[in-house]
Image 1 (cartoon, rainbow, N blue to C red):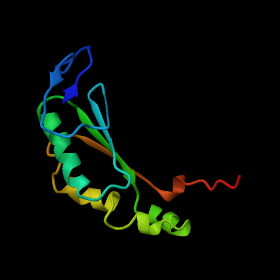
Image 2 (cartoon, one colour):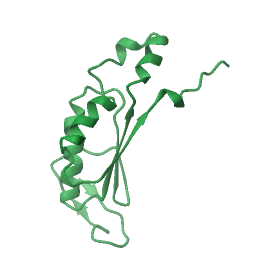
Image 3 (spheres, rainbow, N blue to C red):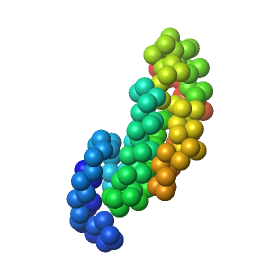
Image 4 (cartoon, rainbow, N blue to C red):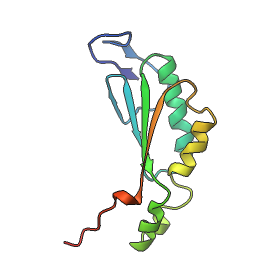
Length: 123
């Protein structure tokens, strides 16, 4: 179910029932999913969920935040490489789903966090 806040536009003040899982965050027509270390089948579900909610006019855009593939190097350095392996969610698992049309007409904005954003905490 997606609740649309009061305001202007076709979605304003409506509640839309949908047979999907609950999205992580929603505000003003923007749906946000954070997929950090789930099993990669989650990337089958998320774009399809955004497509359905978009078709129901419950959202205007979907946003996905995940990790970039290169973060694996950092995880290995800190001894956590086996926890964040090839079968968990990261950009190279997401992009084929999007390029294959998984979200259909729903506009998507996708962020992959890269190791350039990592700051070593020496404190």
